[in-house]
Image 1: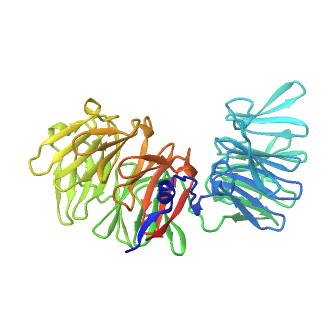
Image 2: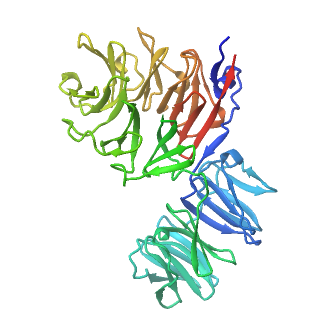
Image 3: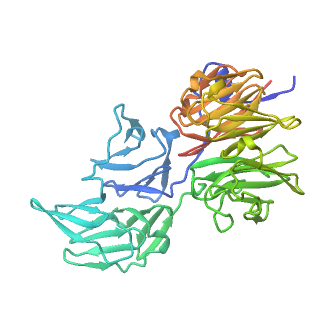
Length: 505
């Protein structure tokens, strides 16, 4: 028998075992949220992509969900008697004897004096709280208000006591020194890339600052050293994924396009693209087409980027892309345009579509399925031109269509109504996904099953029937899926995962 490829998660589901885990995870630790140090001089950094530990010998360790953290997104870190406690939106965890122990109760909250607090510290026994407009220092039972430094920064984003002086990071500007009476800018040649500071810590041997986009910076020997982890994407908040020329292309929320190649991760930013907010990708004519959040479309031929290639379309802003191999379909307000590689054909005067945002397109043999925001799903007979509507009045669970895919039956993912399936005569809604937002659909290798991404986790539909969760992704905000002949890639808000394929006779 010819061997067939099955997704490891699919096999586990078929065997009624959903405890399958991805073997690889990629996160970015460039966005630092909190810093702390232990008595041995170890540095601990909380990031939006896990926890970093720098040991006294200079070696680094990285921890993610696959190492026992409750989430890749860590929003706070505290140290008490050298016990490291990290805070995530999901739960709190402590690092004890080399492993993470997740607390069973609700996650610990990061304490703040009020909603305007931007940073806090204890300096010379006095409580110090920074707000958007001032620095407040508690002296005995009264608060003394200190005006912000005269720099160009937006607010004090971090405080660091330094003996009789208090260092204050002005976000976007640099570090200022407060003597107790006046401000002065620190003359320490802080690099421009390190000025969006989120936190600071003194480990005894050096000063460390965390930034919003550029990771960790160490000040030692009167010079700054950037510490970036190897083999990481620039960002991991995945919006869509596709494989092109053997590489994995990942669009991010607002940090451009990151690509996993055989040599590691590379990034395309708005210096190459029209925008740093790519939202969707398709392949047509051996080129990669990228749609951005502002409606512009770029084309990549494998070596050169061509920006805003749909600028001359009648309604300009693209709202969705798809291709059937022979044509590129570009959705616009109230219709769509088709490109066969030589010329455009515009379909923008269909009366029934006027006034509606087109959110998804899927061409079939003799029809085109058209998803809308607020009107449901339309089926256009491309031979007769007849348009048939399917919405909440005739079986659809929601009138806002997010994604359309075919695997045996036709499936439409909705915004708040879960998954709708069309068997050729009627629509049915998956009760297991009721009320969920469907973000991605990927037909599995059986031709009758479907992987389903939602804001509540990853699911698998078998034979157009039973739907089961993939338990290792329970609660994850799955936003994109890409199936290749070797693996299933799962893009989430907090990480990019790879689940290998398994050969089965």
